[in-house]
Image 1: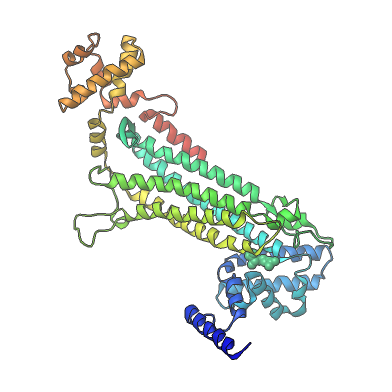
Image 2: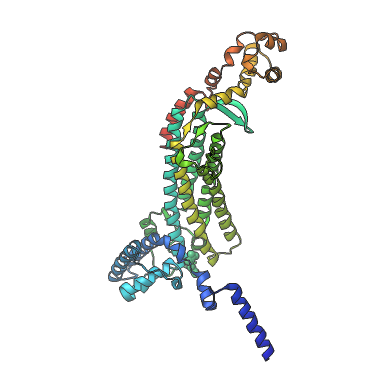
Length: 473
Ligand code: ARG
C-alpha cells in the first residue's frame, strides 16, 4: 500500500469513529461482546437455570456419571449463587455472555474443578431451552391467576347490574336494549377462552428438552425421565433436534397474550367511549383519569387508553419472534437468543395491564340513568314492535320489518319516541294493530322477554353469574 492509500484508509477510519462515537473505539472484540452478550436480560432466568442445573446434577449423581461428593458440592454452590443473586452481591459479567456461563463460572470459583463436571452430557442449547420453558410456564400461571381475578371483578359488577338497562350496539349504532350485566359477562366468556388457550399452551410446553445435548443426544447413560420429573415436566421431549430448536411454546405464549391484549383493548375502548360526557355511562375514578393542562373541564381516560395502546406492543412482540424464527434451519442458531426480550416484555406488560384493568373496573362508577336515557332515545324497542306483529298478528317477519320501519320514520319526523305515537298513528300504517302493542314497547318488558338461552334478560344474567362463578372461579 502506498503512502497515499494509507492516508486515505486512516481518513476513513477517523470519519467512522466520528460516526460511531466513543462506544466502539476498542475494536471488534468489544463490538462482538456487545452484540453477543445476553446476560443483561437473560439474568431473569437465574432461578430456572439453577433449578435445572440442580436437577441435572442430581440425575448425573444417581446415574453414577459424577460422584456424590461432586454432586453435593455443585448443589451447595448453586444454593450460594442463588442467595448471592437474590441479595444483589453477584457480579454479572458481559464477557461471560449469558446467565448460564455467569453461573458456571461463579460455581467454579466457589467449588473448584467439580464445577466443570456439571456440564457433562449437557449443552447450552438444551440448557437454555429448558430454562426458558420453565420461565414461560411460570409466566402462564401468573397470567392465568390475573385473568381469574379480572373475571371475579367482572362477575361481581355484573351481579350488581343484572337489571341495569343500556343500549346494545351493532356498528356502534343503537340496536337493542341489553343489560349492563350481560355486557360485562361477555368479557367473562372472552377471558374464559383466553384461560383455555393458556391451559393448552401450558400443556403443550410441559415437556423437557434437557438431555437433548447440543442437538443429537449424548453417549452418557442419562435418565431424561428423571430430570423431566424433577422439574415438573410431564415427560422428556421425544426428539433431541426438536428439543433444542423448538420455540413454538414462546410463540404460543405470545399469541395467547396478543389475544388477551385484544380483549383488554376492546374493553378499554368501550370505557373510553362510555366515559365521554356525551355518553356519560361511566365515571372513572379520580385515580384513573387525568386532567388537561389547558382545558379545566377535561377528565381523560388515560389508563384505559394506555391499556389499549400497550396491546400494540404485545402484538409487536409476537411479530418480532415470528420473524426471527421463520427462516431458521434446524437446529439451534444464535438468532434464537432474540427470543427472550419480547417474551419478558410481554409478561411484564400483560401483568401491568391486567392489574390496571382489574383495579379500574372494581372502582368505576356505572351511571344507570344516562344508559337508560340512551336506550330509550335510540328506538331500541323497534324489534319488539316487529316481533309483536309476527306473534300477535301472524305477519311474516319481512312485512313486520317494513311496517315497523315506517312507524320509526314517522316517530323520527315528529321527534318523538315509538311508544309516543298514538294507536291511530299506528293503525294508519297497519289497521290490524291493537292497543296491546304498547305493552311490549316498554323497555323493561322488552328486556325481560329476551330470556332465550344466552339472552340478556335480568333473570338470565343472574343465573349466568352463578354459572360463571362455579365454572371459572
Ligand atoms: N444465550 C444463548 C441463548 O439464549 C444460550 C445458548 C447458546 N448456545 C450456543 N450454542 N451458543 O440462545
